[in-house]
View 1 (cartoon, rainbow, N blue to C red):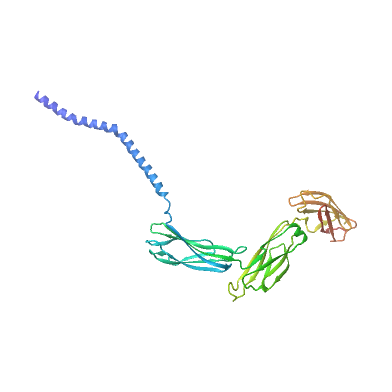
View 2 (view 1 turned 180 degrees about the horizontal axis):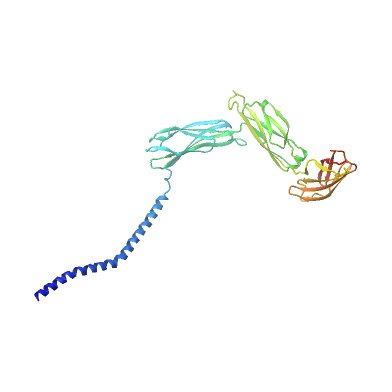
Length: 381
């Protein structure tokens, strides 16, 4: 009995660890899925938080400007074409070094230049900033107030910008003035051949004997007058009948003699805009009407394109034609893209000589009569 108990006790001791192992594995199996799900959830939460923080950091704007100062020099009254130069002194207002940022010089316009002597400044350091302004082309119709220069962008060690603006202010007067600088001719003035005068003056000692003018078309200079203190010209529009309104220009040239002070040796220009309103009568093409005749030398046909502001879809009726030693009948008309086509039948009283030419006179109600040269050809004897 004692031996059997001993054997039974050994069996119980051997079975107990195996039972505990199975129990632990069962426990681990029971909690494995929730634990894995929890770990995945923590990783997702960490990922979301990281993305949010990264976006906030990426969206942080550049440091705000720590200040801005403005420096301005008044050059007073100047004449267009003069070059203005002024040097400013700039002190570093910080207790830390600053430097000019990359692309840190921003000009107001192409007429200005800004140069910084020292682009890096120690605390309380000083540098020079030179501004140059070319006033050529900055004047208006009269005296005009301008201010040009640029901005220098400095950076502190922590990347914050500090702006300093440098400008030269001036009242710019034109070197050559035209009066009026806008000339307009009405339809009635164009029809009557009215001429108008333009005067030119300058605050500079121009050699007015060398003064000259030119135009860009549709004008005629009736006269050009030069005195010791100025000049003038008289213009009249010359507009062909096929043209309606015209915008053109008069350009005047004057020269400041060498050795005469301000802008010496400079060629000056002034512009005058000219507007002319013209209601055309009738225009035509071809300018010369070529008419081939038949074997008799007396009959022929031709096509003539007529247009103008008085033509509104159809030629005014009745049309009348006058041809020396002949007759013309309009047998039809057709509206085209550029005007009205007239189809003409021409009959001469007698056979025309080879290469004969005559004038065809055309009249219409409310329209000034016009003459078209006619050339007869292809005459068969």
